[in-house]
Image (cartoon, rainbow, N blue to C red; front, side, top):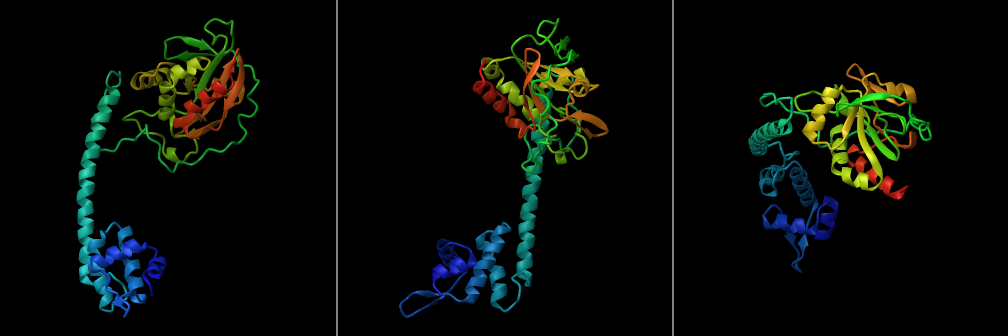
Length: 324
């Protein structure tokens, strides 16, 4: 067979086949016209090279496996030399993993120190124990579905609740004329389950709960777009959760948030408005959603929210597309 057919059947490029030949891994017959002539054994060899490369073995180190096939073995790793190559590759990986683990531990230490710099909560010495990465989201998080739990909210008046804020005051949610109320214009309140922090474990199975993970990236997004949100028409921005004010205050300090957090440990707003919640770690927590409140009435709701790391940009886009 010609080189093009070999490449097609083995799932590689003709360039790869020529490279294998340059290393002496393939030695096709030559026809009278000098064309290369490949057979079924060559197809088997190229497929084996491709499979071993997927395991991370360099093409140059596949020769013991090909030699094993050449002497008549059914499997390329039936020979002692093939097993020795496996062991050598594993040893090299183990050394690389050890080096990466040491680098990771050093980075965790620097992150912990930086995250607590200026915070009232001191960094703890946890040795080489892994710390949850609150800033970056895993790629395989389950997507939250729209279960209709927030469909009734647009047009609903905000209840006259007073919630403690990280600004050492209380904020009344109705208004705009009540003392300490939100005031006229648009207020953005993003509601989230809980914010993790270094040295504090998240509830078991947190990443498997659709929409639970991502409170820190969401807060950082509102921090980074805060001035743009104000310029787009938001008068005030708040975060709101059922965590206590002292816990929230540490988060505000550590993440350097330019806005206040509202604490609702009794989930009074959930009961008053019928907001969706879920159970985790033995506690009832808010599901992630965002309210746009205008003059004491819920004008718009974002629900469900995903990914939370991009949510502040979604709110900003909506504000710009719906100017007052």
